[in-house]
Length: 480
Ligand code: BG6
Image 1 (cartoon, rainbow, N blue to C red):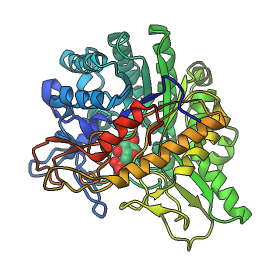
Image 2 (spheres, rainbow, N blue to C red; image 1 turned 120 degrees about the horizontal axis):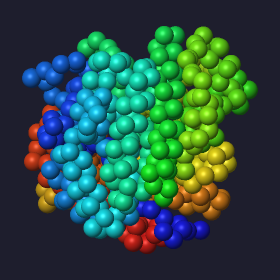
Image 3 (cartoon, rainbow, N blue to C red; image 1 turned 90 degrees about the vertical axis):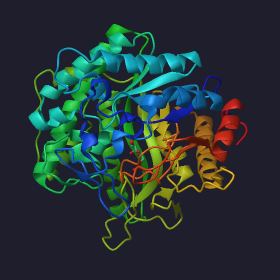
Image 4 (cartoon, rainbow, N blue to C red; image 1 turned 90 degrees about the horizontal axis):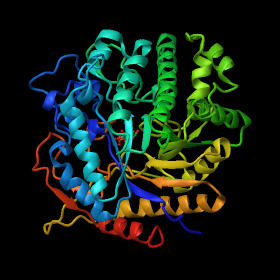
């Protein structure tokens, strides 16, 4: 078994966690620019106005905005064939509803893409990764408002036309299913809210919240489908994919009630893939909405739009698996978006995420079996604390072990017949954690000198995993 020739190895980031350059060159505020730092035990806060004495991690993040040449050179040194990044919507449209884009914002990403091309690195661009313009939240209550579809389409049109010769691979919405699972109201839907703890984790608790979330999701489905169609008109070579938060979900026991519960929980995963790949809502939708006591507004023509805008490939994030049970006494497991109970066969990361490489093979087979289109694993990795030794070295063998085992299982899945075409582990250069706002939860092959309070030189240091991953890429997955 081996990885196919031309397999795309690389790494992934998102502007709100990586880029910084807040309000520079005309950039407006994104919703995430209003999120304070937090920790594993203290929630991040959302504030409607930016407070002077408060730390907002996205404002500087790790300063890719000024260091992109150095960072892309490091990726090239590892041999990246692909670099996943997101475009910060507010760099292009500071408020989100303008007619004319911000030229300086367009110029920035042009320079980034040209830098990638210099090294033969293919950009994989997420159009929306928790970066909704704050103005669209404030004035329209975000994606609950159908008008957001037109704003998004206009933004996509500008990007597609501007970068049609520089970017081939696009993702419309990051982890679109998080709208109904995890990061929800603020980061994904951009629903107008009061200052307070930001619900990064957790499921909607009220019927109204649920209805709002599914309505917002419907608007994102329509926006995504329209974007896919438009993209293909502008450049038929474009490959445009969906991006879904993936986690394997197992029944906790062989109790048929647990089996059914696991199947139902997995539907939160399939729900989005089914709409974006098959172009229609899945068979279980009506009953699910009925049991939730919600209904959503759809316009005439929406069904056609979904059919005409199906994606070219399926991409997903994978960090962990979890178990479902009807037993309310079972021990809850931690997770950013995948939440269930602890699996006694698995170990957990320092943040309580259960490590399950075989779950990746399982999920790849489930997804490919269902959709039969090319697959990309566009996020995976171990969030861990790193120690810089006196000589400046960083021995992150735990990260190497995690990735090695996951790569082995991807290889198995390819052997099973899955058409897997790319792997971009998360936070290839250390960046801000989305769930906790921390820096100390690191994923990178490259260490960034910055702490949880925002102090540090921002210097980049190669970890042991950097040299390891370089070999993995050079050998196309043979040397693990
Ligand atoms: C995914 C997101 O859910 O998980 C990323 O797409 C995020 O934006 C990643 O950073 C890891 O989560 P965390 O909370 O460790 O940053």
